[in-house]
Image (cartoon, rainbow, N blue to C red; front, top):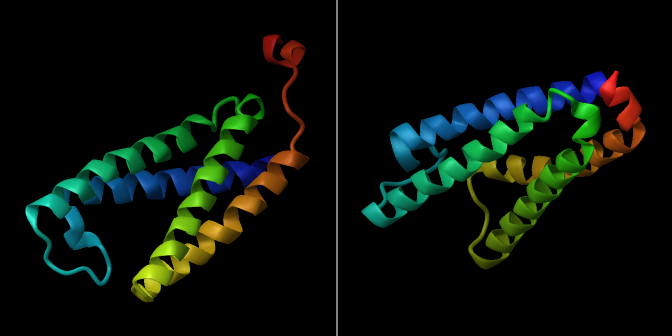
Length: 132
């Protein structure tokens, strides 16, 4: 189970960091189905890309000493899940987004419970094991 969790966090973190850099460098034009935006929306996208970059960096940070950072992993899973719920609000308020984001909504709602389940199966490191 630990290997699966490491793989999810490593791949997910790397993708998140990569996508963040694309948004920082190229702005909203990298969003599937996007349209040209004004300076305000461009600025907002690049700002939130930095927040997304931090999220991905924390995912990668958890890889070393993962057994001691399981509460952080659960918190990251909760944040991802709430992000999926926010997409549901958008779906209700505005309508269906590009199919890519429909798929992302499913991932954001399904993957966090899987991650939490896996973290519950991983034995946390004890203080004695951490010192050894």
